[in-house]
Length: 552
Image (cartoon, rainbow, N blue to C red; front, side, top):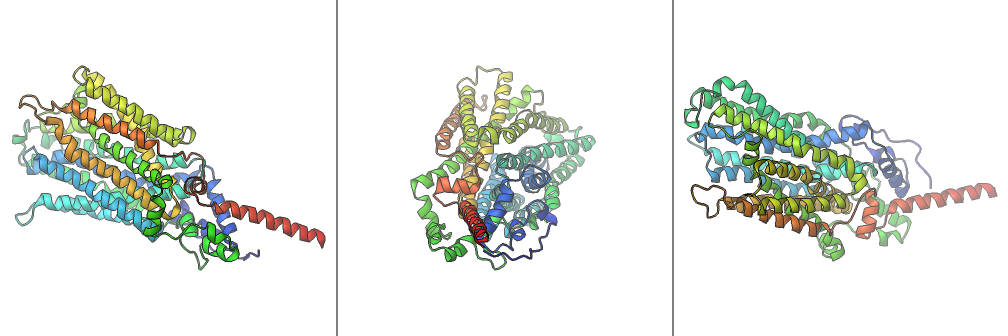
C-alpha cells in the first residue's frame, strides 16, 4: 500500500510535550491499521523517561488539588467554627459541608466519565480544573450577610467544587492509561494517584504555617468563648487562605491540560483525525471480513448489551463494588483520629492556638507514617506483583485489622491502636485505594473506558456518603451522656464486614499486569486486537513486495 511521503507538522508545545500527538506523527501513513500499529507501538514500547515524568506531573496535579481541597476543609472547619459558631459547629452543619463535596464528586464522576467517551478526552480535559478553581475562589470570597445563608451558599459551592474533583477521576486515569508504556503503566498511574498524599501533606503544611503565623492573635484565647476580636479575624483569614491555596497547583497545570493531544486510542478507534476515517470504518472498506470483527459503535443500547453479559458485567460489578466497599471503611479510620492524636501527644486542647496547631501537626505525622509510604510502595510494586494480588491482599489485611479494632477495641492500649491505625493507612494505599483507581482505567474497552471508570468511582464515593451519613453516626448509639463513642467498637466490626465483602468483589476482577490495552480488550471483552492484524498484513505485504522484486 502506498504512503503519503510528506509527514504532518506535529506540535510539541504545552501539554503535547508529555501527552504527544502520536496520531498526527503517523498521519501520512494511508493504511489505517499500519498507522494505528505504529502509533500504539511507540507508546507501548517506550521506556520511563522525562516524557512519562511530565505526564505524572500534569495528570497528578489534579489529584493533588482534589485531596488538598478535601483535607483542607477538615482543618478549615475548625477555624470556621470560631468565626461563625463560637468554637463548635453543629453536627448537622458539619455533615452537610463534608457530604456536599461528595455529592458533587458523584455528579462529576458520572457526567465527565460519560462526556469523555462521547466528545473525547482532550475536549474536556482541563474543564474540571476550571470548575475547581472557580469554586475555590468563590468560597474564599464568601461572607456572612443577613440576606443569605452562609452554610447554604458554602455547601452549594462545595457541590460545584466536588463536580470538578469528580471529573478528574475518570479523565486523569484513562488519559494516563492510554498514553502510558505497557511495562510501567501501573507505576505511572499509581504515581499520578499518589499525588493525593502530597495534596494532604501540602494542606497540612499550609495549615501549620498559617497557625504559626497568627500565633499572637490566637494563643490568648484559652477557650472558644474567649476567641473574640482579633482571634475571630485571624481564624476568618486563615480558613480563606487555607482553602484558596488549593487552586494554586491547578492554575499552574491548567495550560498544560488544555493543550494535550487527543488520546491516540480514542482518536483511532472512536473518533476521526484529519479526515482519515477511524480504523474500523476504513478497514471494513479494505476487507469485508473486518466489518464483522470491528467493535460496535458506542451507544447506550450497546453498553447495556455488552455489560448485561455476565462475563463482561462481572468486571464492572467487581470494580464498582470493590470501590464502594473500600470507601465505606476508608471513612471509618477517621473515626479513630481523636484517640490516635492523643496517643502521639497532639490531643485537642481548649486553647485555640494549641488546638489548631496540634491538629495540623498531628495529621501531618499520620500522613507521613502510613499514607505516603503506602502510595509509594504501590507505585514501585504494582507492575511486578500485579494489581489483583495487591488489591486482594490489601482487603484481607484490612479485614483482619478492622476485626481486631472492633472485637478487641477496649483491650488494646492506645499505642496498640496507633500501630493498627498506621498499618491500616499503609495497606489501604498499598492495596485497594490505589488499585480501585488503576484497574478501571485499564480493564474496559476504549469506547466505554471513561464511562465505566466514572461509574466505578461514583459507587466508591456513594460508599463514603453512606459511611458519613449512616454508619458513622452510630458511634454514639444508645450511649449514656458520660460515655461518648461507646458504640465505636461495633462500628469497626461493621467496617470489617465491608472489607470482607471487598475480597469477594475483587475476585471478579482479572489481572492486567504487563498487557497492552488492546490485549486486555481482546482477552476480557472479546474484541479483536487490530494492531496484530496490522502487523501481520504489513509483514505479508513486505514479503509480497520482496518476492515481486526478485521475480523482476
